[in-house]
Image 1: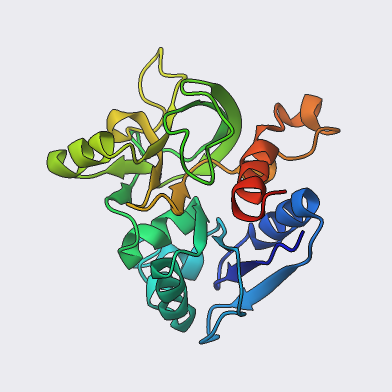
Image 2 (image 1 turned 120 degrees about the vertical axis):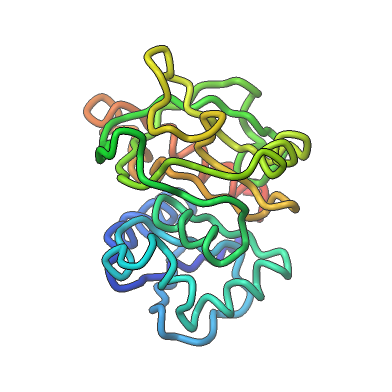
Length: 233
């Protein structure tokens, strides 16, 4: 098996090392770290990951400045060729700002930073990221964001539903929406299913030894799905 992944770092990224460690732990392969001012990506990548954090201090609009970084031109080109892309938290925001995913991430309902383990319901089971799950299966994945309120116009939301492009929804909503996201959307896929943006952090839920302390190792299963779908591991 040969699996090649790259993690991009922007000024203000703070989960880039976590993302690289998670991918390496599950794949057993080294991850290439790429700086945002680079203009090219390594050849033959199976996965490109955009990590969480506060790129450019979240000035202007979360992810808006990072989306204009030189490396994003190369990333968009690779995505259009079918290379898998995973954007987590700030990475999700960058993907919407770059136009690779529809919608926008706004301030949380209640204007509060949310940091806890969330319950997600699997909504799609056919993408490289989700094919190993059952529809409706619940996962426990940490969230840590202030701008995770997913918004799109009604026509876009209806299209996402009709095209099976909602990857995950927040399931622990008995007392209301976790952050105000429309239709409780926690993750969205591109039209070809090979780009995923999600607000929860799977890279923080990958260690089975730490499972009792951190609450879950369900994130490992997401990375395992990617590995199996892309290289058959």
